[in-house]
Structure formats: C-alpha cells, structure tokens
Picture (tube, rainbow, N blue to C red):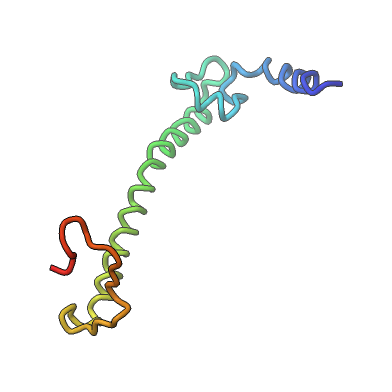
Length: 113
C-alpha cells in the first residue's frame, strides 16, 4: 500500500467533519480569514464562551512579547550602568601597550585624534 493510499485513508474520514469548527486542523483555523460562526446545535453557551476565551487569548498573546522585551531592555540598561559605576573614569584608566593596536591608518586620519 502506497503512502498516498494511507494518507487518503486517514484524511477522507476527517474531511467529513471539517466543516465543523471543532474538527478543523490548526492550519485550517490559522488560514481561515473569517470569524467562526456557530450554527445550529453548536450555537450554545459553552461554545460561545469557549470562542470568547480563545479570542481574548489571541489578542493578549500579542502583547506579552512587547512587555517582556521592554523588561529585558530595562534590566540590561540598569545592569550596564551598575557595572560602569564601580569602574574608574575613562581618563584615569591605564593604557596598556596591547590596547588600541592599529596596523593600518584610517582613511579619515590616524584615528587617535
């Protein structure tokens, strides 16, 4: 039995129920551009509440990455300046010979001015 026949045997029974919102695959629901409308026996309080929760979760899920990125940036900013507080000023630091090694002149000048 070929792979196509196996897939057909799995997908055809599922296709009978694909018009129902409960039996849609995640890809089908992701690609659907219209809002799910409950009709007939599927239009009950439980399913309406479930759809409302899903809608709210989808709307609030977009906000979390922004909040986490902002907290991360704020934390990194504070850690950076806490680190610089215990260091001596730039003018008082020792210039070792291995620092600022230049083997080629910059095209705008020597780079030390």
